[in-house]
Image (cartoon, rainbow, N blue to C red; front, side):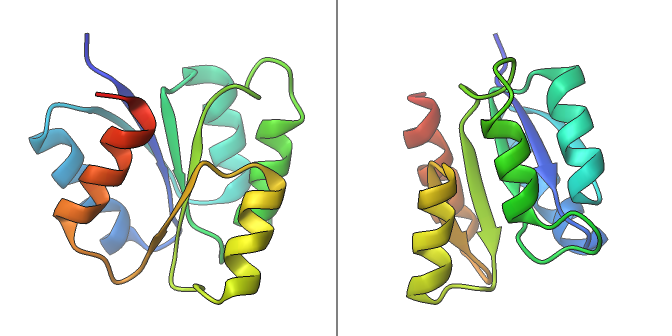
Length: 122
């Protein structure tokens, strides 16, 4: 059975690139372009993994992650942050809020896929 991944990023180019690479590697992909929509799609779709950008208008990645992790329906879904913000403080904050991993932009597709497979154990 295909693993479903929700990609939440306000940059259409990034979203399309990541989605295309995931689909080419056998994943089912759902997308959202902001944190609020990402949270709503997490509730509706129950993905196996959420890839979440940090810097987005409105509800940012940290707030979306908090919303996912504090809802009993979605708390067990692993969330990996996908961001150009890669300072130690950003990594620490993401882990503190409950992120399962952190992919730094720009990233190599093979490295992203390896981290995703590790988190999903596939």
